[in-house]
Image 1 (tube, rainbow, N blue to C red):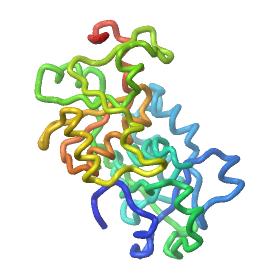
Image 2 (cartoon, helix red, strand yellow):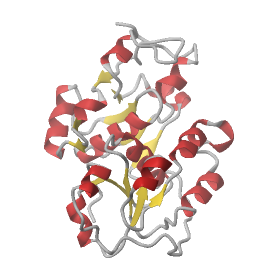
Image 3 (cartoon, one colour):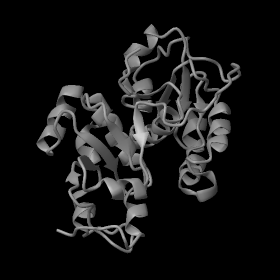
Image 4 (cartoon, rainbow, N blue to C red):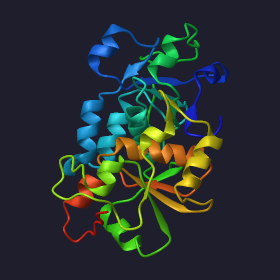
Length: 265
């Protein structure tokens, strides 16, 4: 299977086996889901990724969380959300960072709703699996605040996936400070999407080029809280960039540290 992070629904029939992970809320999952899909408790995962005691440094926590989904190190995990793509990307990023074979279903749940032929290769929830975490083994890396701060004077290229209002500092969200990281290039995550689908690789490549990125750049993506940064990282990888990392804790983490520079336009 391709190392591209996004997979089409039509390509699933070519897989001998895969695990389906549903990232929607419990109510939506209960109303209907793909056969054999397992729900990811996204509300737990999102909070855990930002909490000190369950952050990505707590490998044992995430190994258990991933293992509980029935994910192993061999059978690919196909992740879908409600079509926003950001929540599926969030889970994809965590899975691949810890060494799981993971892919985002392009179009999310609507892609399944348009098709009744979910392949039988989707493993049942009771299928046995053992997951052993390998932090940093995935194609997209993770960077923290202190590391990124030290790299700003180097050749790193910051991909800011927030809105224009967040970038300029007009929209603070929940932050005490607003603006953008020095040298950051703005490419809102909404531009990466065509409805509920990530745009084709060639279009993504053109969008990144128009935003000022070049082939071979060392890209670090960020947003405000992780989901859009994960989608931006997936888009950069899909567009052919091979050195991509996500600053998962993103601008909310950066803004709270007064020693971190912020530019206001």
